[in-house]
Length: 357
Image 1 (tube, one colour):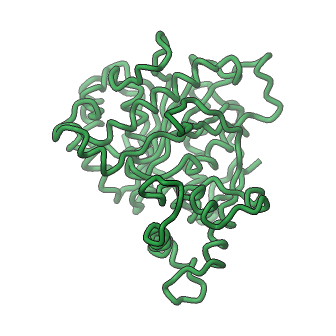
Image 2: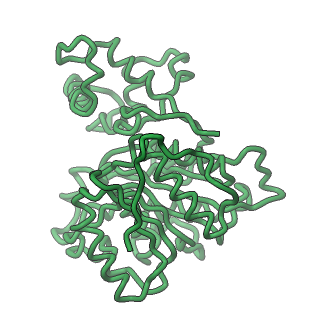
């Protein structure tokens, strides 16, 4: 069954609010904080007038149609309408890590009638984008819901985001991107450690994500460093394959070896499918050097799929959301992780991906 559509606002603001939450009588401030926790810049659990104004500005910039009366300001009614549009598939939430008062969560989608006691199926764990400093796990709810409908246990993850304060706490050579990685590793370890309870085959786990999430999924599974010392010992973070949506690699990462994928890329890198828009600057500047190194290492198991004329984050909108899922489905079927044909249909408008050698 085709999963519920998420709106553009959902993808951009990346929330987890549903109509059921609205029914509980949460205040507008509470709803906004759940919709976009990054709006609470000072972390005091409240929205100041300045923080709410900044949140409104973000909505107006990314989704101007939210301003129904065209006055350049979002009224309470218009803000509520934005929140009510954020209705997508929901999984079961687990806490994989506790940091003080902050719970790091995975939202997991299970196949229909899945019985962990009798069957272990492949798993997939996806990390959202947002420039390493924004976003939310709901960005991949749609994809996780689809993969679950095809027989996988699929997780979308909340992880620590970098802040302005991190810059002051690190040396000049250290990238602030590194603060995201320990949570990536903790989430993967939790997923493996609880594979029996979840009904996941720990030897058939796929990792991936979009943009910054693609980058951190690669670092978290290939760099042996940046571990949380509280993580359980003896559980590695290696995975069997990757599904990557325009992973944001950068030449500037070389300044900090801990976040530079090229410095951790080895000849045994697993099979992967990678999606890019042909006009995405991250493609030529970031991924091309990685592809060149893969070629020099003799890696032939990475499949490139290009959306001609599209730019960064094209996979967040239809029909590309379904087109990339169909290609990912076919890739995972070739690996033996899925069976049968994709249950989504290619668009009648004719858009397709091209395979890059």
